[in-house]
Length: 197
Image (tube, rainbow, N blue to C red; front, side, top):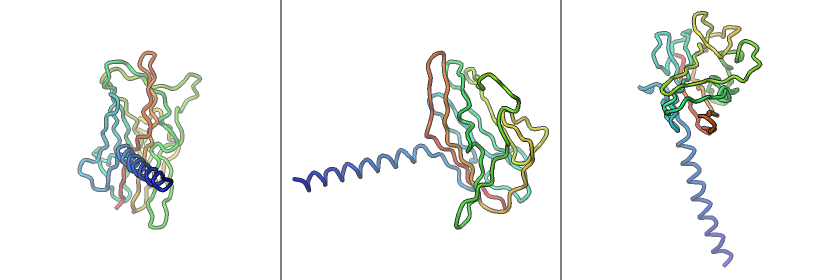
């Protein structure tokens, strides 16, 4: 009797692990180096998210030349019928962070910005998006004066990345309200693998 109960418990545990791993696959949206369509574009609960890297010509890309500047772009579009208010939790410590992929370990190369909300503000920092309105956050790796990076602050320029393989990853923690209803989109990961040649 005990061994039968243990076997049944073991079988249920295996199915639970399989289910959990399938769920994880559905929540990771990943671009590989050289992907033809080099943009992650997913809609969740009426909010469309886009995450990409742009080359100096403004094209979606995952392969860049040595010394070439590139730009991060994350945007969301409100496809609901209501105006939404989005809080800034999604701009977390991992937002636009770059990791170099080495054979033995991974090296944190930092972020292209030095802070958020460049000016002192007392009020809560939110984004408001009307139906079908897109809000984009854009930031170059190396500082360019003409590029608007609000709400990200760039107080110093970064050195160009060395030749090698890298990735940048967003762990989405997206909080928004419509009227008095609150919604959270979490545990969605967007990862772009890219290369400097």
